[in-house]
Image (cartoon, rainbow, N blue to C red; front, side):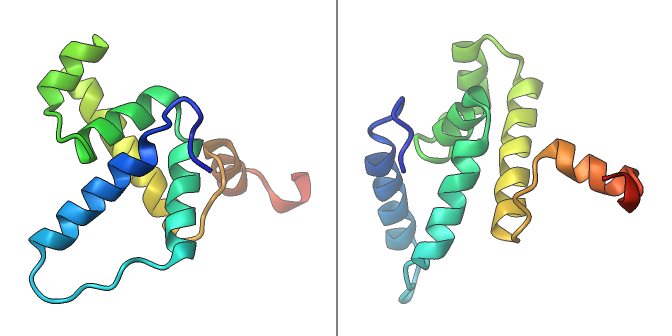
Length: 114
C-alpha cells in the first residue's frame, strides 16, 4: 500500500525504525501490523506536500530551514505542515479517520440535517 510516487518509502521507513530500535535501551516489541497499516493510511491521506515534508523531517532528518529552502515555503509554513501531519496521524491512530469536513459537519450541523 505504498505510495507509487515514492517507491522507496518502505526502505526509508525500515531504516528509520531500525535506527529508533537501536537507540532505545532494553527490548522493544515492533508495533502491531494493524497500527502500522493505520499510520500508513494516515500518511497516504495527507496532501502530497505535507506528506513529503513530514517524511523528510522524520525519516531523512532534514531541518525545517533546509525543507523551507527546498520547497520554497517559509520555516513557519513548514512547521505548520509538520503539525498538520502529526495531528492527522494522531487522529487516525486514535480511531478517527474522518476528513476535516466530516468533523466540522458533525460538530456544527444538527443530527437531523445530516
